Structures are given as structure tokens and as C-alpha cells.
Image (cartoon, rainbow, N blue to C red):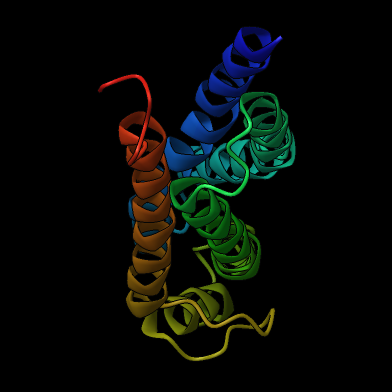
Length: 180
């Protein structure tokens, strides 16, 4: 049963966490492009897709710690320090994703959609777009500026670094009996 849980755990990590890390990493540069050209519908659609991937796969990602816990129970390693550290880092990664990455993606997406929904040929629309890209509050109440994308990139990097650390701990497993 241990091998079965381990296989499911690894597959869930690849299928669920992989897309989130990639899509979240692609979001900040995509947001910068979309904010720079508010009329670019394709850029806004790309952001919507990336955000949806992050949300959906974050939900599916709950299977990773659940299956990891089942695997650890069957292996009898629940009290090992490497596993406790991995569980703590996984919790922190989830908190970063839910509290820092996804909400900021939503804010930037709202700002992009507010800019893309305006008619660039009118003076009012140009003012709204300029307001959204200069960092002041746009008509939607969302502050969107290049610094927001930099902060999002930083939080995404922290999320990815946490997952990389968990992956390393899962492979190296200090005190492992496999001899690796």
C-alpha cells in the first residue's frame, strides 16, 4: 500500500503543483505586458487563463499533502524531522499562495480588465488607462503599477522556493534508510 500512496502522492505533486508554479511564474510578466498595452485582448485573456490555472490546480493541490500524509503513515515516518519540516513548509507555501499570490493576481487582473474594457480613442478612457498604469487608483479602485507585478513576482518566487525545498527534502530525506 505504501508504494501505491507514494505513486499517487508524486503524481499529484507533478500534476497539481507543477502547473501552479509555472502559471504563477508566467503571470507577473504577462501582467506587465497587459498593463503596458491596455487594448491587447489577447494579453488579458492570457492572464485570465493563467489565474484560472492557478486557482483550479491550487484546489487540486490539496491531494498532495493528503496523499503525502497517507504515505508517511504507511511508512511509519510521521515523527521524522525531515517530514515535519516538509509539512510545515507545505503549509507555508499554501498560505503564501492563498494569501499573497492569488489575491494579487486577482487585483492585477481586475486592473487589466478595467483598462482593456475602455475605449482607447476617448480622452476619458486614456485617462483611466494612464491612471491604472501609473500606480494611482483606477476607476475600479484597484491599484495597478509595475511595482505590484514585482511584488507578485517576489511572492511567487517565495512560493516556488518553498516547493523546491519540500521536493529536495522528499528526495534526500535526511536519515533515510534507502541509503540515498
